[in-house]
Length: 170
Image 1 (spheres, rainbow, N blue to C red):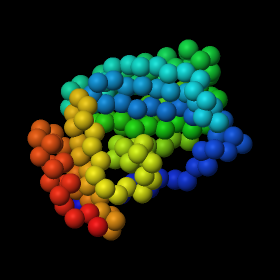
Image 2 (cartoon, one colour):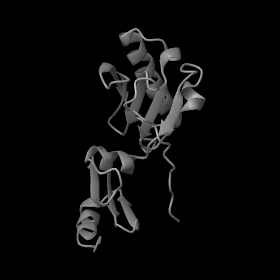
Image 3 (tube, rainbow, N blue to C red):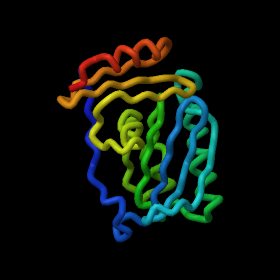
Image 4 (cartoon, one colour):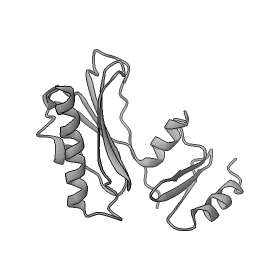
């Protein structure tokens, strides 16, 4: 079964609608919160422990992201009520409005799955080709032009990357 995630359109470069963005990412090694203004200027960054629930409990992951978010707000001198957009991409856990809604009551919350972030980082906003994340864990994706996809995770990812690279992704 294929899982599709609807990503709402946000005019990220319109300072009239996007005043402050709080971005939260995390995996097995660490989590990080970054605060940006509507023009993309970084106002602060705060690191915390990893959040991959293959390695830590959900409560430990929640505490880590809370430390990162509270830390970046405190370091930048910004109150959570001023955040207009809160975006997350976390491996193994998902924290959004249920965890941070009280702290950032006016924010729109958006979740981006890891695959979308990996391809977007490469400049591909419609995933196509082979993508690989090799950090604490490892995941490889193969996405064809017709949107058929395969995901490989865990041990032996190099084998799966080789297989994905030799699959006709026309």
